[in-house]
Image (cartoon, rainbow over all chains, first blue to last red; front, side):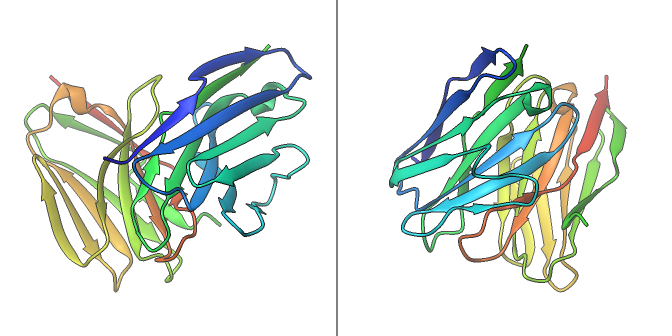
Length: 115
Length: 111
């Protein structure tokens, strides 16, 4: 079956430092990977969509300078939260999809706490 | 403007009752819909996806999609206290774009 893993599941970082999180697809080819953030008491905001062999598309209010993403192959993606502050805390979700298939598979998320 | 709207914001039903949740898209290109459930402190878990008009049933859960009105509903039959959670609707275009999430409906099932 198709699964998406995320690492780490929980992490704590000091304000002003950076934190890298990973997303791994198993059982299918992750042609596109979407990263989301769920801030406390809120819904899942789309940060960016990365498609293999295409430019990464960031949503308004999110930038590559703050959330650089790597998507080197069809099973792996990573995102870094640079210079994290209190407003960056939340659950970061990765969702992956294979080209020409409708189903989107989500990982369990990485919960980021900023001290 | 949020492209996916959910109602109600919160819902309380008695144990054994029927819970009905609604979701509408304001973007006519959104043709694929998903329902997710999130218990407190956890990540979201996929309940079901629906891409065609009509009903889709999985156990106690039934989703209904009307593409003409861009409306999808989720009905939970014989609701249990363990169904108490946040329910999110997500929708996307039928290409490789990322799904957008609604604001969620908080369901409480009272014993």
